[in-house]
Length: 389
Image 1 (spheres, rainbow, N blue to C red):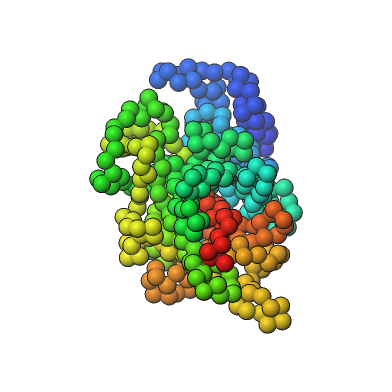
Image 2: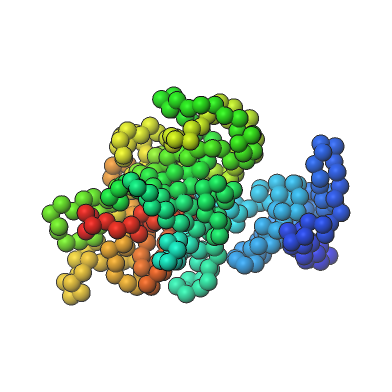
């Protein structure tokens, strides 16, 4: 009996997403329209959704879980309670999952496809352990050259990467030389994000500008490539300071900030926010200079030092089969000793990126960074850096 109900609810949940008129609406007292299926007893609904979530654990089957969350408000609340964040489930389910920390115990395998003609980049989740699967689309970015810098606009929509799009989630900005980069989040990276008083901005009515998305960019991380003044041989040297993640996050029991919504559903939660079109907002720990104060508590990542292979006559890193082509772009990031006393957590690879084809690259990441942060860091590797090589 329960199996029949599950199959029926699966099919109906798909039809709700495809055609909202397939269910009879019911107007409740607060003026919102609810589906007839919202009146299923919560105990039964929870049991059904738990079984659907457990059975549909991979894409494309996992779209059933997303469809269930789109039936009505009560289904959405219960589905969000059941579906665990990637840190604990190792699964990317909802769009907000790309802003949440990856799994603690292993790397989440993804890949990036580059389109040279349109200067666009597409991030996919690997569906299998092989390098050639089609993948599940996660994020897209478009390169925009400016007179003094370069921007990579990052979006949830593969066809609309404009800053004004509702799918816009952030951007990566480089300096003129392409040696220093800043990652900006289009929304507060965590509930405690604050705007420094030094940023004098004019107040705007956020509900009139946009009822969902705040007008501003939050600076959350800085990437720096070391200049190769002497022209010595070897791979690029880089470090990354993620101001929105405390260095204690990598320690046992440490916690990384986790976003739960892509937009401010309740604008009253941030009554004093003010934004400026010309200034960006720093969050987390205070930042001084391009890389901030190394004692401010932000997580510092450095590329893992490669070893020189005498027989191959090249620098080598062990990517465990995930990288097949030697490239100066290839790198692995680990926690820097600057975060505190060295421990086992400093040996774990947090992000690795490498070439597998002319315009294909793998990107594997783990806690405490998110897919969005990892993607932005990898985008910085695509820029030409003559001064660093």
